[in-house]
Image (cartoon, rainbow, N blue to C red; front, side):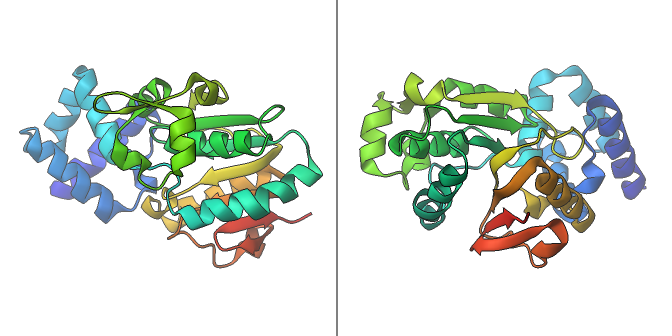
Length: 259
């Protein structure tokens, strides 16, 4: 009965939003959503769905929990140093106009990190940074560009002082950085991908998907990159057979499209 209740919830969410929860790891997703519905006082997923369909705030809370909006600037700083010192210079030799995409960008820390690095290297003038997420609430926060000091703990101090204004309780990112990033709603599992990207960053998201969904996404990312373009993944998301997606490892967690 419990499985039937959860499976009907998955079907209803897909019908209402186009989001297919069946492509996420079931045990993780079910545990997370069960905890959320009980917290909101619903004994079944059926009554929880009815409430979600009527209450926008409840729906955004559900999306937020489902997509795990946890992010920081310069998360895993060593990998960003590799991007800064090795990957970007090589990409810029091949193309003076970089087309970049931060996929599943959450509340904006990742695309703004990339934007700051590109500006520091004077690569930003002709380059573009697209940032997408399935969660409109996360995108709204990203567009506001207001962050806590916790989000900035790994960010270089010189960039913090240059590109942020400190308020009483928070840090506000400068319009100079903000204006270089275009935010859009996008469902990685259902929507089409643009093509011709030099760099795609998709980190700490794939761990929530089934192997089948991951395989499909790597194929889609590969098709979206130009030959020589790079996919940058998270520190728990190493691709074990990159060649099946036309990738080769360029550095740890960086995969270059062959061709």
